Length: 233
Ligand SMILES: [Zn+2]
Image 1 (tube, helix red, strand yellow):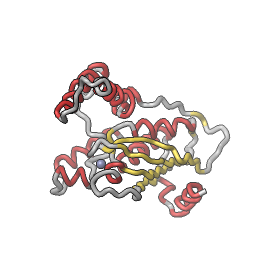
Image 2 (cartoon, helix red, strand yellow):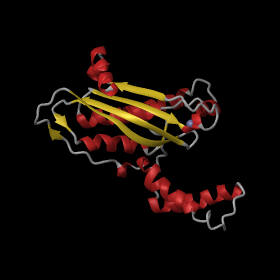
Image 3 (tube, helix red, strand yellow):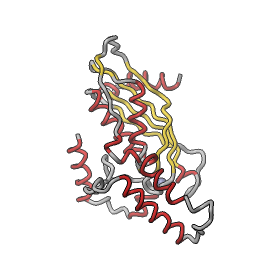
C-alpha cells in the first residue's frame, strides 16, 4: 500500500500538475497525491528540536509583521504555536503518534454494516494553514476481525492532525482502515467546512465540501443507500 502511494506521488511529480501554477493549486485546493508529501529526512531531528526551530521562526514572522514581541500578551506566542503544531494540530505527521489498533475476532458474528457517524474532527488546510472543521462518517463490514469503536475515531483524528486536503484525508482514512480491518468493504464520508473558503478568498460562509470513498461492497447502490439511510437517521 505504502509503495503504491509513493509511486502515485512520483508519477504526479514526474508528469507535473497539468500546467496548473502553484497559486492555482492552492486556491483551487488541488492535491498532488494520496501520501502526505514529506521530506525523506523528516524525522532526523527530534520533536524538541522542531519546537525550538518553529518558536524561533514564528517569532520572526510576527516580528516581520511588525508585532511587538516584548508585549506580555505576545511574547509567549511563538513558543505556544510551536508546542501546538508539534504536539497537537500537526501531531499526525509523525508515524510514532499513529494509534495502536488491536484486532479482535468478530465473536458476535455481526456481519452487517457497522457505521460510526458524526466523528467531529479539526484539521488544517495545507494550502493556507487555516482550519478545516467537519464530521467524518466511517463504515465497514467485518471480514472476521473487528476493532474497538473508539479506534475508528482515533484513526480519523490521526490523519486530521496534518496539513490536509479533504480528498486526501478521506482516502488516507479509508486506506488505513482497509489495511487494518483486512477488507475492501470500507466507506468514508467527510462533510467539512474550510475556513480558507468561508473566512477569506471567496468568503462563502454557507458552502460545505463532501468527499467520499466507497470500497468493495460499498460500491453497490443498495449498500450506498443503506449507509445513507443510517446517516440520515
Ligand atoms: Zn485552503
